[in-house]
Image 1 (cartoon, protein in one colour):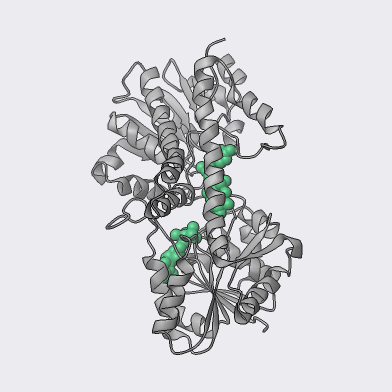
Image 2: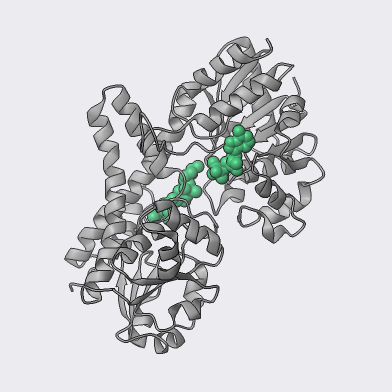
Length: 467
Ligand code: UDX
Ligand code: ADP
């Protein structure tokens, strides 16, 4: 069966870029991305490509090429489902905030709503592809809903988790390490797998397209994220020891990364990992382990999160301690708010927790981020519900000029590794700050020699002060 029309439910950080690349690489397939969020769809359709809701290097030119040709963004979910041979589900699966599994399990209500809508609308056989990261065995729940609430048509469920990282989404999609497709082994299941393989084969070498059973595919995505997050927590745990002993985490990372069994990636010490996936997926894994009575397994993975929380808290504690045990009324400048560079996404960003801790100490925080909007920063703070939103706006200010943000500050905290921070006139920044002028580099980004020569007191995560 040749796929001619696909639709994707969910026009977010995963659905949007993924479908844009499929549309660019498969001009003969009509790709419609739908979302219930009208303003998001309007932004995807905006003539000004700087207004796309997702910032990713290279995404604008792909959207420019494919949009209106075979790539469409719409709020008309029913029509898109009705037309499509293959439907990708790429909606959000946040951590549950209520009921059983609160704070751990994935909330599958958006997935279920999608499944019910597909079942209601579909009048012909469809392939349904799970793109969102889901707990293992979700496919059986989706299949149940589809089979029991549908119009008697047949559904094949595939799992096709997306491994792109934000900030490098376009490159990751164009040249993936692998594409993973899980399906069932019936004849129809194999036909469905083949239909999806044929789409990716338009640009991905066949030997990088891996097919497995559905459960392996679902669990592999959680496993990959757990392993990656574990590396970050492991290196962050060592950064604490470095600071105590005079070792330097950059040197340690380099030394261990040259061991081919360990490899060099994901060994950058930081103020803590963020992003929509790591914390959520590990909590989900912990919940799955607990629900099978595997408490030791659950504890093992939970430690990755606890280490990450510690890394964020100790960063803000260090600022308070260094500034003579009080930051009350002092201005702390934040460079960066996004959870990593080259994205406007702030979900679970370490900056949010660090800011919250400092506001609890009555600091005045001023934030600059090259891509994150002011409303988003306030929304992140308000979401924590630690204090009234009026107070958040009184204590935390956002400015689009980094020099203004640093002016009269007692300390600068680097929260995101944006390249542009290294191009600043640090002499000028120093002259306009309160003295002594402190820099707390949560990303090990800046040139410590240059900063120390200017006169800054410079703290870098994972660099020992003992010699
Ligand atoms: C991650 C996975 O990499 C991706 O495969 C999956 O599809 C989604 O989750 P993402 O969250 O977009 O992607 O970004 P990633 O590059 O993995 O970074 C996650 C967090 O870890 C960021 O806050 C980053 O700053 C931090 N990190 C990463 C480190 O602190 N040190 C490192 O060495 C690497
Ligand atoms: P991700 O990072 O996984 O892409 P996002 O939160 O950025 O997650 O995107 C998920 C998108 O899915 C949101 O834009 C949300 O509005 C959309 N969405 C959630 N439920 C539905 C639904 N039932 N129908 C259409 N879109 C939905």
